[in-house]
Length: 528
Figure 1 (cartoon, one colour):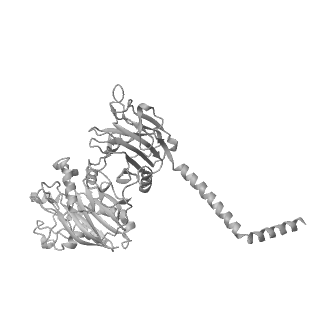
Figure 2 (figure 1 turned 135 degrees about the horizontal axis):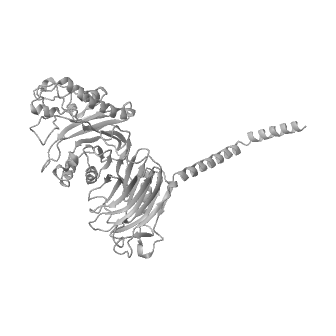
Figure 3 (figure 1 turned 90 degrees about the vertical axis):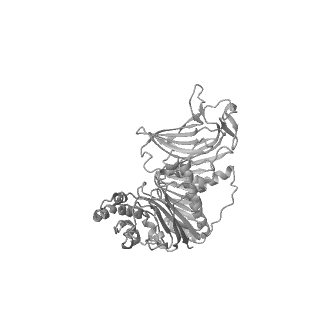
C-alpha cells in the first residue's frame, strides 16, 4: 500500500511539473542568476581594489581642495609638506596591477618624484614604479631596478600637469609583460618590460606619496603641488576602464570619435641614428620630428630609438609603443593591441586600428654580419660564397619574425601586414647584373628579401621603381656620399586589400639632416 502511494505521488508530481513549465523555466533562470552572481562576486574578490587614499582625513596643515573633496597639499600654501608613507597589503596584490592618481603641479622648473611604489621580492631585489614631474612641467614615469632604469619622458608641449588637475594611470599587464600609460583619458604609450620584473614571491610592498625625504625638516625634495585619489587595483585596466574612470570626474570635451573609412595609409620606416642625438640631444630629436611631420606619415616603424621615441611621439601627438631601446612604433591611429614578437632588440609587432580596418605593423632591425661597404671602400675582394653564408643569419632572424606573425599570414583577406625596418643589407632586386658596375662588379642574391618575396611580400619601393638602374633608392648613407651607397631600409607589404600607390626616400632637412639613414615613405591603398 505504501509503495502504491509513493508511485501515485510521483506520477502526480510529474504531471504537475509537465503542466507548469513556466514555473520550471522561472526556477531555472533564478538558479542561473544566482550562479552568475556567485561567480561574479568571486571574480570581483579576486580582481579588486588593493589601496585607496582620498586624503579626506588629513589635518588642515596638509589639506586643500582637490579633484573631489580634499587633496594632499604640498604647495606653497601648505604649512606642513612632509611626504606620506604606506604599507600595501601584499595578500591582495597580483602580478598585474593599475596605479592611478590625480596630480596638480605648481609651475616651477624643478623635477620631483610624486609617487614611488616599491615592490620588494624574496631575492632581495626591489622594483620601484615612479610617477614624476619633469622640469618642463610635464609628468614622467620610470621603473628602477638596481642599476637599471627605463623611463617615459614626454616633451614639453602636450602632457602638462601644471594647468589643472591631470589623471595619470599606469596599467601593468604581467601576462604580456608590458605597461600602458595614460594621460587623462588617452593612452599615450605602451612599453614592453619583458624580463624586467622578477618572477619571485613578494616580501613586502610600500608606497611613498609626495616626494623624497631630505633636509632637516624632510621637506627639501617634497613635490610642489597637490595629489588626490590615489588608487591601486590588482589587475590591468583597459583603455575603456581608464576613460570611464576619468569621466566620473571630468567628462571628455571631445565628441565620441566615429570610425572613419581610411583609404590610404602613409608608412615611414626610419633608423634615427642613436636616438637622433648626433646633431644634439634637444635639436636632433626635434629635427627627426620635423621630418616625420613634413612627410605626413601616419605610422612610423623606428629603429635606434634610444630614449628619444617618447619625445618624438609626444611632439607629433602620436600613440607610442616601445619594444626595446632599439625598436619602436608610433602611430597617428590608436595602437589597439601589441602582439607576440621576436627578439625584443630585433622586432616589435602591433595591431593599429586604421578607421574601420586593422593593420599588422612590424618594426624590424637586422644586424650586419659583414661590413661589405667598408670592404668595398678599402678595395678588398669579398668572397661571395662566404658573403651569402654570412647573410643567412639575417634570414634566420627574419624567419623568427615571420614565425611571430604566422597566425595572421593565412588571413590575408582580413589583415594587411606591413613590415618596415633597417635590414642592414642590400636587396636581391638591386644587386643584379644590370647595375653591377654600381656595386663594384658584384651580383649578390641577398637571402632575406628573397625569403619575404617567397611568402608573397612586396618591396614597396621596387613596386613603384622596378628598375634599380634608373632609381637606386639609396638609404645608406646620406651623411657620407663617399662611402659605398646602398639601399638597406625597406617597407614590405602583404594582403589582399593593400597595394602600393607611391614610395620615396627622404634624405634631407631644411637645416641639417640628423641621421645616417635615409627614411623610406610609402603611401598605401587600403581597401575596405
